[in-house]
Amino acid sequence: MSTYKLNYTDSFGNGDANSSLRSNPENGFSDLSQSEKAVQELLTQQTPMQATDDHLIEFSEALRTVAKALRGSAEGKALAQAEAAEWKRRYELERSKNQELLLPKAPLNGVCADETNSKGMDHLAKSARLHVQENNGKTGRSSLERICSHDVLQDGEANNGCNNKLKRKASFKLSWGCKGQANDQHKKEIVSFESGNITTADRSSKQISLTWETNPQTVIIFTKPNSTSVRLLSVEMVRWLRDHKESNVYVEPRVKAELLSESSSFDFVQTWEDDKEISLLHPKVDLVITLGGDGTVLWAASMFKGPVPPIVPFSMGSLGFMTPFHSEQYRDCLEAVIRGPISITLRHRLQCHIIRDKARHDYETEENTLVLNEVTIDRGISSYLTNLECYCDNSFVTCVQGDGLILSTTSGSTAYSLAAGGSMVHPQVPGILFTPICPHSLSFRPLILPDHVTVRVQVPFNSRSSAWVSFDGKGRKQLEAGDALVCSIAPWPVSTACQVESTHDFLRSIHDGLHWNLRKTQSSDGPRDT
Ligand SMILES: NC(=O)c1ccc[n+]([C@@H]2O[C@H](COP(=O)([O-])OP(=O)(O)OC[C@H]3O[C@@H](n4cnc5c(N)ncnc54)[C@H](O)[C@@H]3O)[C@@H](O)[C@H]2O)c1
Ligand SMILES: Nc1ncnc2c1ncn2[C@@H]1O[C@H](COP(=O)(O)OP(=O)(O)OP(=O)(O)O)[C@@H](O)[C@H]1O
Image 1: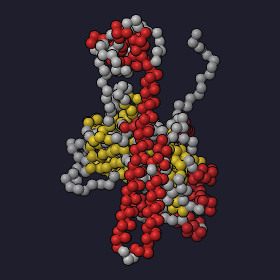
Image 2: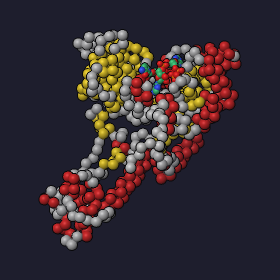
Image 3: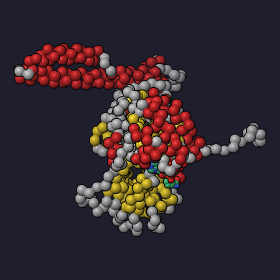
Image 4: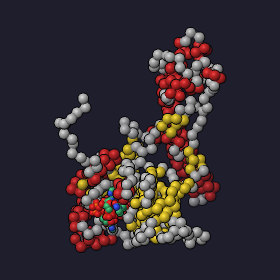
């Protein structure tokens, strides 16, 4: 299987700082490899003795263990050094920004920051001006009496403030919690400094590019059934992948039968017997290709209950929000993808779990289902309103009385959720869309919840009817009174290759697929503002 790395790039093309980590002599890697080499040489010299001298064998094993431990510690040190350097760089950057803010910008007018704040907050600019007043004023101290908290902090000299309110502004730190536990994972995204300014340092969703570190060799192709054009293309593509790329090709059992009916030369194509085997294929498969519409991308993603290899989706349907590649140019496109690097869209999935009231007291649970678009809870064939109690973490959200509720990913925001009145959201925005279906209430607007929450939808015990759940429009299951659906963002996103880049492809799809905001341009003749 090939390996690849993902680079996060900002709009200025700045990449990830971690790449500086590799084989730096300062980290001690070269010293270490020298000593490992020496140990290895010693062991080789000792080989004739090994058979006879147990002590020497023990000693050589101990040496190997020591070498391993040394290497582990040098790697740890290298990581720590790189992280410290990164924090230092950020600190210097922030400090120089703060210094710039303190430079005089406008003439002084002797206003106390508290007074100005009550009129409108331009906190930093005001404190900078006031600071200059102190330097220029005839009597530094008396003018300082009019200064309030923020600016004094910058040098810490003055401590007699306006109306005795002048105090060092409280410093603080931010920490991220997840279900009551401290979590450092996102710390680097927002930086807090002693001066109390919160600044966002990094964006969580950047354009991501995928670079192969070894060539992708194994490809799996999923195709839309019952389509002649798809079948013809799959025959051609499989042949091309073998002849020009020497790829190992996997297809679904149905497709393998189709290929063999075409020619017995396709017996090199591999397949599986049971869908469960696909999840075992993940460690071997480098690339997934889909030939069909969005439904085929959903289908392919649903085959992977854990990590998913990158998907290259070819458009052979009518809409194609997630399928940016044109099948006519499949050779150029696959050449480019296999060569890399490629832009990808990292699409979050939801993991959904049904908790049965009956099973509450025993250990019987149902398997998680992963969805790329949405999970829908609706009234099914019942003619009654659904009555669904919704909770976000442990807070009550609302009771849905209507046809149902859609919990959608941002990728799914252009699918069923859109039809039910939800917003269209860029697929790389992390979050869960909470969109009611035909709510019997005038004020039930759709919500977008943050990506860290867990949503629970429960059919109340006194509900008149049961509800039905479906996953990406498939696999309907009944929810009886007392049953609940629990849903949160899954740790295994789906990466789909972009034609250009994520935002460009998203905008193209809403323009081409939905004719979004298409209107004849108003002519320039006619009445005008005078
Ligand atoms: N009223 C509705 O709009 C409605 C009703 C039921 C299901 N759906 C959608 O259909 C999806 C299942 O798709 P399918 O192809 O298996 O069924 P399908 O063949 O019935 O096609 C549904 C349509 O939804 C489009 N679609 C799917 N995912 C999309 C996305 N992320 N963005 C924009 N359009 C998208 C497809 O291109 C297709 O045209 C469900 O996940 C659900 O979102 C929509
Ligand atoms: N490999 C597959 N095996 C079984 N069913 C599949 C497979 N690929 C797609 N499907 C199903 O076939 C249906 C249609 O697929 P898809 O949406 O890709 O084509 P389409 O309807 O022509 O596209 P569009 O909706 O854009 O016009 C979907 O319900 C999907 O789940």
